[in-house]
Image 1 (cartoon, rainbow, N blue to C red):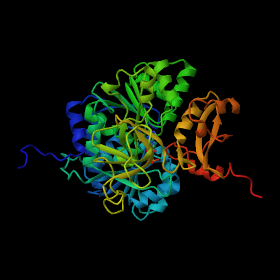
Image 2: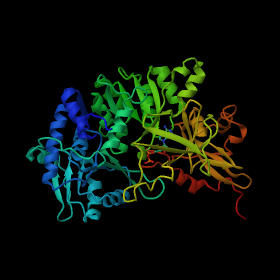
Image 3: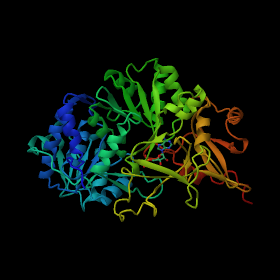
Image 4: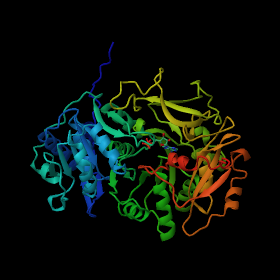
Length: 547
Ligand code: ADP
């Protein structure tokens, strides 16, 4: 017997409709590319998104067509999220920090029909357009006529102005009802190994992810929150916040292109931000600015950190010096992206402060809708003892099953698990801790050494600004850890003190065999350290010189 309940399809348009009707006055505040502060509301965003959807129709966009964006976090980007998915097309957010070659590759691979871009990306667009002649019909700059960039596009490709096409369009009277399994948005992984791969989210996966991430032990946003996503809308949908914030009625404060400590602190205070999310580098910048300027964050209650491991010193510094809670989260593009979030259980209440803090450093427990397990090289499941590390696998409604262009299910093993490429431990209470990337872990004499743990220790040393540990080839142990560091500005790294800094923090045999000081470390488009490039350069650093 079937249930007798209503079955509205889980469509993304339902989020903005809800926000417009029940949180009509909740704000969307954006710092524009031109430098002004733009204020609008969910009611206006919904109305303009319907009008923009009408404009997309006039441009010939229909169900399943790809509409690309190259844009910072701002109100027009939010309108595009809802207009494109809401009308049944696919919103393809492109990461402008990718190489020009990768941008052309993914826009062609996705067969993007129209590209919306912030004016600051005009040179990128001009460079990429000739390579996209086959599918790209128009470029729309997200601005008014007065600020339109003057670029030349290939013949047959239209150059349009966002505000003009919106003003000229007839709005959709209502959002269409779509099959909830239909594709809604597309995001490419940053391709640290090989070409980027497309992850194609559905309406259903996006909605379930937003609902689960709004639970109290995850992002848990509420109508009293003013949320500032530092994490860009061009990288895994700003961790789903353009959906989870309007769903809960939280206001969205959009920082635009300036993500340095001073700009963020100013906006957080001016706009009474309560919660924000970003990668560790961003929070390091903010911390340095606060310490140097003596400023405080007046209204921020918590900062969410993910994307790479949160250095424990960040958690302590914000907590002890500024009274701000730092929450650690983990996920990946293939997971929409949230997998785990770290919040205590009632059974953890009696932990002594040091043990409680140690627990907070972990990446956390899975949110509802995600399951995980760790396995050895042969695929056998490993125990949850907090010590045994293995390959981390996941499954769930917000986990991808195949990359764009591949057969459904092709990214999964026979039992439906997706291999994250991460190495982790899980403790008896289900707290997961990432110890490495599968391809980064140091395999010393058959034992695994966590490069993440060694890096966390290194960045805690006062002379060190940034650190990376790589597996260097070793004549006796196959691989040994090599520490590569960048000195803090104006400081010379005291190597003896840095070496001694590891004593008592990890076993002797885990300690780096050598330390190299470099001027800077190479980074990927998403700000992660490019270990592959470091391995290429330093792989043989510990080998005897060739004779
Ligand atoms: P990319 O496109 O670079 O893969 P993702 O955001 O998808 O970007 O990266 C996901 C990967 O980032 C994860 O598999 C993991 O290795 C790393 N990561 C994300 N969050 C954390 C975290 N809190 N701690 C450690 N590593 C993390």
